[in-house]
Image (cartoon, rainbow, N blue to C red; front, side, top):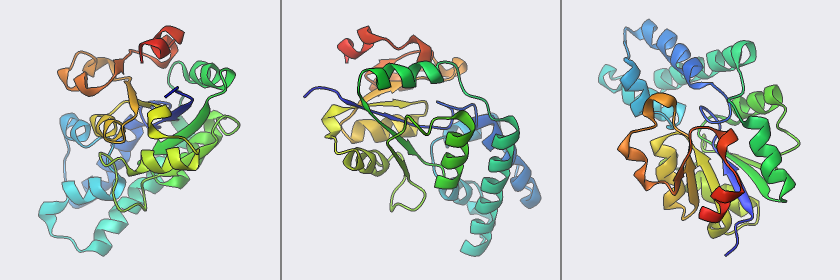
Length: 218
């Protein structure tokens, strides 16, 4: 089945927002006396905010109201930081033009709340390219479950077997492969040699390095 659809993750792939999520979580968690290491943040990259908060504050025995409050505070802080400091990652304009010029249907599938996605789309000027956007925020399951990708493909009226997906996290990569879609991973520089990316169909160092040759390889 011919590939005719591309679906992108967002944080850490299209926009350099992972450090901003780290900053926001660090500030909110400090209120509770919780300290995080860089390795801690990496291990839960790609999860929804509510899942991330519940995991790292699980030993504090907070009720759901307090956990929801912490998650909401992180989200609000991230939105403010993105508006002030958010920057596109290399190759953003190139990759959207690449697929747009080839007539691909283009989707966005993110673990972030839709209001964060809307903030990023407006900031980076991607609105004219993206046909469908899906958020796992209110879905029954988030990444590494494939639902957010399957829902995006369905809204685009595409078969999963027609989709190429771009990811930067292990949880996202697992979600893509579980959806039976082609997965291209773009890891951060420090993680590019990690063997954990072996599940992906293709690994590249930057969005700007993707080419027609890579489509043929997929």
